[in-house]
Image (cartoon, rainbow, N blue to C red; front, side):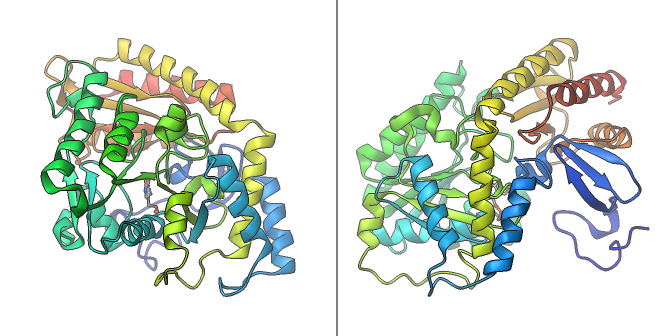
Length: 436
Ligand SMILES: Cc1ncc(COP(=O)(O)O)c(C=O)c1O
């Protein structure tokens, strides 16, 4: 029995099934458990500890800020808040834009929707998102998410949300022959929906630009096409970079892989923003939207928005990404990860698809039968064999994330090459032993 097993209500699980070691520390890609075990983290916890655990530069910054000033709300100025906003605008090239700080990813997305609606002059305008997306677990973001697990709790309609099919190249809803075609057709479908409803009815399109939390990795043709269609129709595009940002996709922000052709009107951040050392989220607004809001009352914000302690952690996190060249490192190791996973795919028929790899993010999709592509379990159920595999890995001190019939690989960007290769060798061994 673990100490919190009977007292804490844990998220995203059945309480009766929760059972996990207590973590008391960490270093680099490793978590340190109370019983002395060291566990290699192959998912950056919830794809958030991009800098690894207990990054010394971030911890020192939090300590310094705590000694000087823990908190003032946004009725007052705070130096770290000003500095972090400047750094984010600079890294993203949103010259003349503004940053709204939030507590995490869900409220960043909710606020991005509010800003898009206000700036478009359609306070109740529709928001287009896609199936198999994830934007958070507050009511509004559950409605935004194309996530069947929570659909019984909230109706997208009540929140003015319309879902479109995802750019899921392996199982393309548009019967495409190639990933490129799938990306183009998926983007075209958004354009058609805007045309059908009338662009004046649509306040914004919100999407994860590439790596998706629920396992979709959009083909490269998708995001630039989406940007072109939305620009042509005068509809705002919101990039949810909560998971894909801060090096996860090999750039600061995933849309930057397409240069200016990928620039959204708003983007939302969290997770890697502080490397998860303390909670913080943000909405970055283009100058066009900021100007529209300049003289309007903003009826939004939570008490702790722009918390100085969290902003100090954000500044130090950005410095650490830069000093250690972690964005380029993510690109290099991501290529290795993809290559190795493709090798595993050639060897293990249970692997139907491997996607990602622009940075340290990849998805392995498991199937019962490679020729029919029948999934190992129907989404979002998890097959007992996959549960057993993940449990065996943990017994051997490696933690893999899984969702439905997917294994998600998103280790901290500081992971050592050998640690990554060893974890993949273990995965190889466990796939050999896997019994369906
Ligand atoms: C793409 C994406 N958006 C939003 C969220 C919600 O962020 P948070 O859990 O910090 O509210 C997540 C979290 O997993 C995410 O992956």
